Image (tube, rainbow, N blue to C red):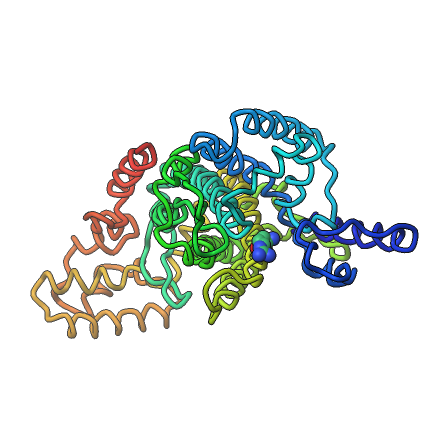
Length: 482
Ligand code: ARG
């Protein structure tokens, strides 16, 4: 989308300059029209400024279609050879930045067809037999999105690997766990990071599931009703690596639910990123002082010389709104559209492309940034000792000695009040003081009242005991490789 705006402006400047001098080229479909489309309308309806990034997938789809047409004797072998050779030239032009895009040709499909016809003559004109731009564009978007999903899955795994590296290193680093942003119970930093590992694992599962529905071939649906030519859709599906064909031609050209699903998965990825971002911002604020981010991920202030700001996580938090907005845009695009293809669907591309770009850029930066997190273990420990974070452990201790939980809760609450009055943490009260609140307290209380005791006691699958975190990391390595 970024580059698209400038291309559009360039097109508009170009067409204004040439407007008076020579008549604009006529559109591929202009045969039944009495006058050329108004220039403003041409610019309004064209998609080439943004859909040109589908070019290589368009060519892949066209080649598979042409090979099938030749195999089914709808076009000749010679036509196929001319199409293949023309497409090779076009691919080279595209990759060399030499391909000339034209607004008059409206979209990526007609631009490539126009060039192919210039290179291959009538063979180029025969390529569109048994096909419509409606099934063509649906195919291109699916092919493109499939590649994007695969790339993003790899990026998610890389971010997970960064999290694992840190979690392994900090499996025993104690920090306060929060609820309501108030110190709740001690956890390890490794355990906390592994929570994000799980979120991104589910994000990858969602993408893999979405990919199944993306990976169906629309080609053969033609404009909406199928085609009267003897085509072989399975052959095209196989050539393009689709799992099968879309079973209904009307549905094939009209629904974009696969793109909506992807945007929902992308919005969730960004939502998870935004939670991590928020925590990074808090943790590196001097009030917390839990972590430092390397300077290459921070920026300064133009007025306050002392500042080092967490711009990257803040921006990622902001971009989450943008991606969630794209999901909403696509839902509204699809809402109440009658069957089958409508031009509304041309609007699917910019939100989809921008979602992919934003998620991809964000994941790449976060992978490096997470690996670069430097932890101030003393600050984390000091904070864990500030909020009576082992109060639940003391209550559990009393319960295990026979006190009903509600009474234990009450006894510990009074101990907390006393500690507060003295300006110290519950974990630092002496045995005599503790016994004032319950005669059940013995010397063994310190095994659970200390931060380390509290952590070690949460020793079950999914718990924060350092040994469990190490086991979870080990298992996670295996999951990543699977
Ligand atoms: N550029 C169009 C799109 O993105 C291609 C399909 C055009 N089909 C049509 N009947 N006008 O949706």
